[in-house]
Image (tube, rainbow, N blue to C red; front, side, top):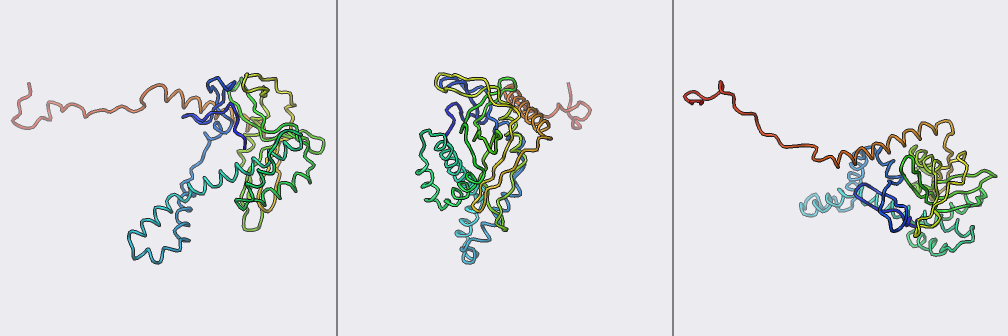
Length: 292
């Protein structure tokens, strides 16, 4: 996926600036949503245990403490390794989707190279299924990787795709997903609705990042919001329920306030200060000790 020119990784998460020469001043949509992260302790433990259970070295390692330590050490980072590999795969799939849109927009693209990168990693099935979905849904792209800004709430983000499908204007977010045992792409997380509604609530879109030129958001706020799960066996499009958008928008705004409150708390100073024991009361002095 093409990296937004105005996005910067900071100690406070991913943040955006108004131009390539300005400092970052607002958080990204995904940074805001990450304030709602849930614990992954159970999943991390499962990944570590699964890595040990499937390691062919275990039978011989049981009698070899040094080798057993190696097995355990490698298993302890199984979740991190899986996460990194999934992120890299997601980047390649997103990039391919972007190139398909650019091709249809008759803009410069590197579609062949994007597909080759998937083929080289054994991931061409993602491209095949996406191509089938693109044709079946008769997608007419209007903008790909569009950077947007909301000054009132204070955030920015890059939208995967704006397109016309069946005569309706759609805001689309792509998610690369694994396939379950039944051969179906795994379900999308409900947090994708927050991501989509935050994109819909944009007030400006980027015209030129180098000069910092923006224009008013020209798309109707009555967009159809689609989360599209891309897997090896199928692509599944899910529409955000229009009846719940208000609640998910309110949740996003609350998380934005939580992000800022975290910054304020960190800037206020040390949260915990050392404290020594209280002085010994005179009445509890040891016998024979004169207290003046």
